Every structure is written in C-alpha cells, then in structure tokens.
Image 1 (cartoon, rainbow, N blue to C red):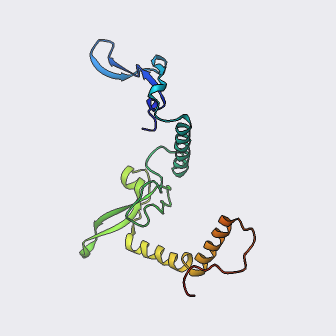
Image 2 (image 1 turned 120 degrees about the vertical axis):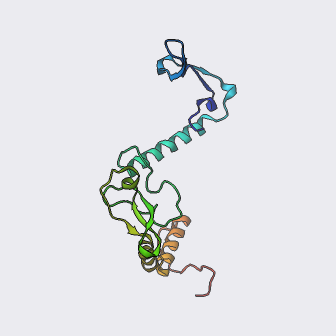
Image 3 (image 1 turned 45 degrees about the horizontal axis):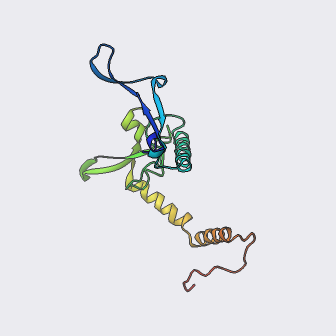
Length: 184
C-alpha cells in the first residue's frame, strides 16, 4: 500500500507484457523505459507531504535493518517482530550476529525442552555456532540481572526525575524529591 503510486495520482501502464514474443500468454515484466506514466490528480488520496513522510520512514527503517544485519539482505533484525519468548528479540548470536530463536527438542527422560539457538544456523545453515542454551536458565539469568541492576528503586527514581526535568525544561537539579503519590 505504501508503494502504490496510484494513491498519489500517478498511473503507470505497460509494467508487464501479457504475451511472449511468440504470442503465447506468459506475463513478464517490461523494462522501465517501456512504461507509460500519466498524472491523474483526481485519483490522489494521499497528500504529497504524507507520501514523502512515509517514504522517509521506510528509508530510515531500511537503514536500521541493514545495520542490524551488517548490510546483508536476509532475515529480520533482532528487534523485528514481537515474540512470546524473552530473549529472541533482545539477543543475537555471538558468532554471526543473527537473531536467536527458540528450538524445541527431546531432552532425556524429561520430555521436550526449549533452547535458544542461532536462527541463521537452524534456518539457513550460514552460521557455525552449534551451541544452544537452555531457555529457562538463560531467562532466569537475565531476569535476575534486571531485578538486581536495572530495576533497582533508586535507579528507576533517578531516571524518572531526570526525564521529568528534561520534559519540564529544567537544566539543574531541583533539590526536592518528586512525590510519586505514595507514602515513602
């Protein structure tokens, strides 16, 4: 939808040839030089400003994608899609930088167990990282580190105070603690 030129009032004819050179029905793309383009302002449903803003956003997202995949055009970057697993969008492979995925396999007498492993290895075979980390162990380590180091009450309080100062335009420290509506 974001790439359909008809939404901005551009009609393009002859993008494809319906028949091959022997007259058989076989659709194929034509060279850009053979396309015919006409303006139809009465068909415009998207303003030029909105069209340009959307395409700037597409280019920005593409640049972020290429940075996340080190310039390769495959897969998705590590933060591409939401996941129901903790580390699939937060971690990447230490060998190739590809995203992690959850792999389920039988594990001894306990039945099936889930592991984090390199998606590039399991889906494409392009990574040499054979190690899979048990999902429960990795999740526990990350959550413990978050609770101990990141979600400490004083750190959160300082971050909120600094964010409020930035939003309110204060340059220096206020000196008075911010009341969060609870009894401390």
